[in-house]
Length: 415
Image (tube, rainbow, N blue to C red; front, side, top):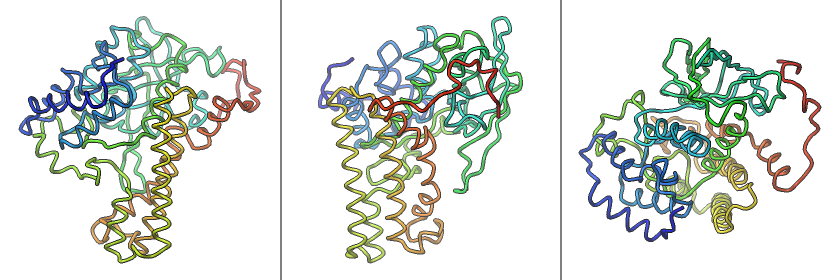
């Protein structure tokens, strides 16, 4: 773990940017530069291509990249989830092979966890993997797979031993998505986008060298991935403009300066999705309702919730994260922030909030957030699941009765 202060991180990164930032580089060449010196994913240990930075140091990195208006590291589930998971549970050979193409943007990953009959009860997954020499043959179906259509590899959970109870006998694989046994079908959402996919695996193959964390240890590895995901979803702070990595996303050869001009920025300089208080204030001014006491009260309530969440995260950092529930609390707060953003946006915009970008005074951002708002309370673990985890693991409340505990998975009733 690095002992550099946030101020030192800012100074060092700023000096590095002075020497290395060039808007005429391609996106991929820029990401290669970031990765070569550890600035692409500084939170990773040095043995995995990072700098061993903690949360405060990472916040300084993100803020500096945003202030300098440069393109940030590649986004996506490979960067956010796969790289930290492999760094923790992978062998050094796997770290050396799998992480570099993630942090330099060469490839994209997806998460092959949820199934039609195994969402909140993820341990009930039925996708199976059968050993065949040095490989595993995988068959099953996954759903709600974000970015599956542009992914080169997938974080796959599959059942390798049905004689074990359902939380055991699960193995975590890094599977190649480009093979005859895998079919990806986009799922069109009510926003008009198709970010999610359903994935069919029909005797797809994965090498035994791509087992992450050991045979049958998939549930423990998956919990690491999910913990990282919840903390990331509930995060905050200023973020740089960022785009997805991987060749299928179609941006690796773009001039980085041109891309920065095309990607929309939020008021904090990021390319993130959502309605910030600043955007809502500007919209209220435009609509002539900023002096409405109900609007002002709703905006203040939203701002207060946002600040309380930020302070809670700072307190968690200062305390070293001893409770273990910070990510779950942040995830719940993020869901509520999105819901309140939706309510305030529609209060300000009125009927105009139903309109899309071509005809709306808000550029369609209120309509988009309204349609998108149910998602954060579902993906990454539902709000109810987060509350159960907090109750059981943080508050010490008794778990719900588990009559199937210890029963082999093959003997459980199936959907």
